[in-house]
Image 1 (tube, one colour):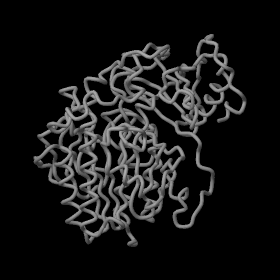
Image 2 (cartoon, rainbow, N blue to C red; image 1 turned 30 degrees about the vertical axis):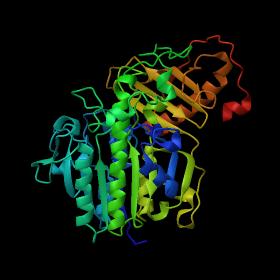
Image 3 (cartoon, rainbow, N blue to C red; image 1 turned 180 degrees about the horizontal axis):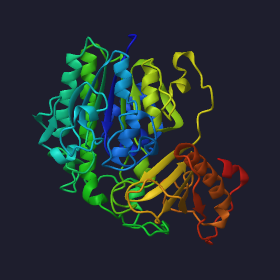
Length: 468
């Protein structure tokens, strides 16, 4: 491998983890990603730390939680005092490029002033791509803030631009970030528009179990007493959504093909991941911003360089762990500001082992249309929320318990156990974990009000299960 491997981030928007065959999807829509997962490193348990576009992007650009970046909701610009991935790679002599959706400036939906671009040298992007372009009308802005219309379906248009960038920078070590809008809904249509003909291939064929057993807009208690017809917009939108995922996988395959043809594949680290997932209005009145797997669990695969042959990584990995992982994979220093940790030592990268045990949980912040916090272990998920602060606030001083799920017995989160006396010990243990995260990341310890006790004939959880 070259001393300075190239690095590419292939970043999608609102993509569920279970689009992959590796996670049980039977439609065969991600053959390229599944093949990469077999030959590279598949981060099997990958989670966003903020299930909304702008905040998640701030986390991936800086390796910090959204409360640390200050971008805790959409519409807030990235703090120039926080060092970005682009600046880290710039300092190491890389050429850096950004293509696609930015969503981290306050300049409006179109062009982004140079000082608000996070240090990227090459620029072909729009602040809010969904506002400047449409499915077959991809409009972005260049380094001089001039409008550029790229031909083709939007995914293909951005991929073509990325391949051209790679071709033109073969002699440089480069770091390229490609940020797609797909499979996010097109806002003005409230639809998931795939390429022509792709919706028909997947409409009505397979519905993930968590979408097939939930009512529309569940009650505040979050309890789902039985299987019901799917709610939300699932059946209206799922066929188009799968079609968009299919085209993204084809674009990912084309990019890998281009790297292979140029002799760059082995020396280029490629990260495929997404900002958050999608629950199709089954958990609240929109598509994300909840603690559920359908909001926070994403597909994540690393290929090339030290990630070749890494296998399936079973540890719980947060979005904030990916920036230090990329820097570590390229042999660069990880800034002290980063809250995440590189996964490379888990894989034995460079002959190293973990200095400290890998965390057995992940922390999630929700701070826009709803205010909440959550912590997830391999077995349990515990979440709190607050209605006592205005929408769009960063956090709360007091939260109410909202959700407790046993992911071993109920992987699709159809049975909320919060408030059951049989699970009080679990809730208390998870509450302590969550308060620890809030204290360490946000700098204070809020009040968490216990849920009203409920009777439900649940088996009492053993001490061993409480700790699992």
